[in-house]
Amino acid sequence: MTSHTANGEMTAPPGAIEKELADLLRLVTRPFGDGAVGRHLQEVAQCVVDSLCRLLRVSSCRLHVVDAFMGAALQRLASSPLGENPERAVGDAVTRSLRERRIVSAPEGELVLAVPLLSGDRTLGVLEVRREHGSWTPQDMRLAQLFADGMAVTLEMARLATESRQRRRTAEALALMAHATSRSFDVSTLGREIVDTLLLLLGCARATLFELIGSRVRLVAVARAHGVESQDDVDGLELGPVESQALRDRHLVATSDFLASPGLPVTDREPTTEVPIRAVLAIPLFHEDAPIGVLSIGDRARRVFEREEIEVFRAAADHAAVALEHARLHAQAAEAVRVRERVRIANELHDTLGQLAFSVGLKLDWCLHRTLATSSVRPKLEEIRHDTGLMMAQIRQLIGHLSPEGLAEATFSNRLERIVRDFRELTGTSVDLTLAGDPAALTPVAADVLQKTLQEALVNIAKHARAQGACVRIEIGDGWTSVEVSDDGVGLSAGGTEVVGALPGHFGLRQMRERIEGVGGRLEIVGRPGAGVSIRGTFPLHLDRQ
Image (cartoon, rainbow, N blue to C red; front, side, top):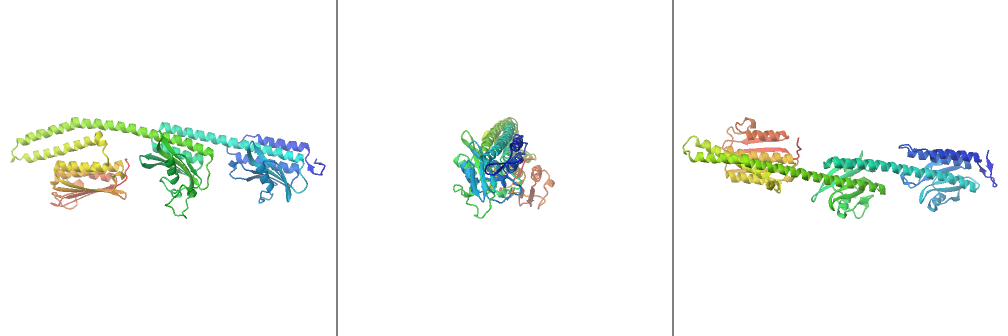
């Protein structure tokens, strides 16, 4: 039965109020299911507006939320009746209630009652009730406040539950990241683990990790969300303006749109160029106050990174700095082991093969000194003595490369020049070296193929060509490397272009062919009687060890 006030307004009997409040309480105290926070909020909100419509006999009731996790400044969560004008704008009473944090009653065509949803010093939303005529009694206001408080409790519980789950997921992800950092020393593997975790935790479009090696910056790892391409980023895989500023200023830099930030100019972009990834968060990585890298995430324009997201990002940066430093220490330890092993091998070469070759050379000199110039064996002894000299030179060269002095050799270019210089001094043959391109662009495997091909070609000239002069030309670029060695010696007996495998006694040439063709390259040998020989090998610039 419905009762009436002194003013003639209809109010619900106490039993109906108690039942509606009991129904609301059961919903409010129900546990949040995993991933069902939003649905639970909507159920409670709909219960609130439906109950008030029944109890207060009003024309409509709406509930708006302003909490950040709902994704909008003011969003309608529920309304009753369900078909109630969805396009109606928020009135002045609601705005004042939010601003002044108190119940506001005002006529706006209908009589409006706005009740704020409060939790401590935070305003979570507002309850809006409309009545076609009459006034609001103290009992009406107390009832609306009771239901508003129930909704505020639910919103606060939802926020705490969401934050708790986010913290748990973050802690689990960071623990996995820390575990990966402790069990692996490969910087690429660690970098991939870090950027993938950031992409998952922060829901961003792109995450990158760069490493500083001297004055050079190297991309360690990049992760992109589904549908995000490299062209969506302003600088692709290069260090962007936000990352550069973070390194320069030595602190975290955050921007919701770096193209609109006056301190972050981008001069190599047309003004009309669309750059989807513009919100960037970047932080430099340090070890003992020295910068060793930079970590960044990027997302669509206008995203403002929350305080909690920045804290997660900082924690990931700490792991990234540890990972980079561990990888460096591991690489230094591995290099120290490699140097010790090379020194050991160099000593073995010097004490065994080097001494043996020297002894053979002395014995050959003794034989030549006692052999007549007209003897039929003298040419063969001289040839053996010549080959022994070449062998001794190559042993000395290997010892030089393996020794600490050889390891400290400045560049690969210097190594190539040293090979040519050693050949010139040993044989007395004039050699011109031309180097086009940057040898630093070669991978270790490609450099090894180039060096051994050059050595084999020069040894071939010393053994067979009887040349007065030779030319070496090395070209590096456009994805390919070529080495061409020509001489003015006796040439090839058959003339023309000969198949390497058909040349008797040319074991070095066969080795060159197998080595170059084994990495997808091509070897050509061209020569004519009395016109010298030209050996040209071409192979890919970037080779990985198989």
